[in-house]
Amino acid sequence: MGISFWQIAIVVVLVVLLFGRGKISSLMGDLAKGIKSFKKGMSSDDSNQTKIQSSEEKIQSSEEKKEDSSPKND
Image 1 (cartoon, rainbow, N blue to C red):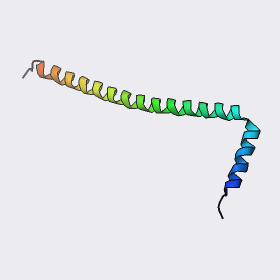
Image 2: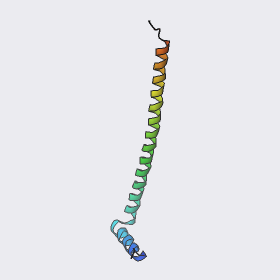
Image 3: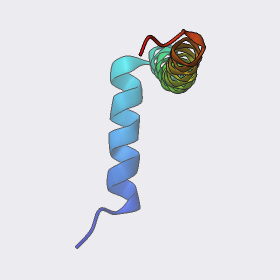
Image 4: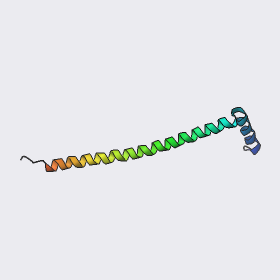
């Protein structure tokens, strides 16, 4: 015994009557903005992580070059 079409239709009608069409529309718009900003934040975290890794690699390579070029006292 599953949920029938009429049960879903009654729930949808009740939700629209309680909240109004404009309120639901604005809520869905806010939800979409939230999802977009979340995705943007996640992608910027990934790009920041790669920037951090590349800068660490540059620092390591510059330190190695300094060690190679410094005169050794034996």
